[in-house]
Length: 221
Image (cartoon, rainbow, N blue to C red; front, side):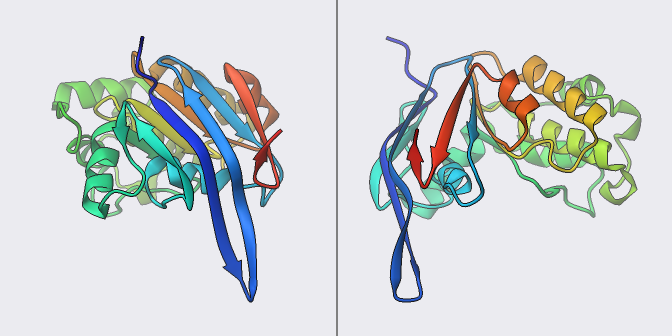
């Protein structure tokens, strides 16, 4: 049997708000097979970002567990979680994660430096070519347009071929034309055997996925 890229089972996460305990996630399970893209949708406050943080090992569940490529992510030492995240996961956030004092190529080089097989310069330039930024390889992040920044962030997240791509509102800050471009790139550049989770409010992004998971009040509907 093929090992799932992600297996999240029975996730619960609670937060305290004043003197009240609030359930951000309640018994959420999610399995992603190799090659699969899943969109997670729901209203603001439904638990989408909490789920993404648990999958990335940036937070731990109060109940349940997450494995990535068969390796435990939840309730591990922070150093173990960071190592697994660096080796197996690409994270694409709403805001730019580019390091300003590095040019675009060196941002990709940094992103790929944690992977099991560190990508060489020719591989990184090919990735920039694929996202239409080959001519901007030596540009600083502050010189990029909004659409270029979105594509550069995508390239960094995909540098070195992660097994799992986690994307939080990947098209939130781009135009409709750039949204279509980013979606095409997500489909074209997903690593072979990898999987993608897209948290989104965009119907176009959701429609591009293989399946959609609806979260409401911290539960799968």
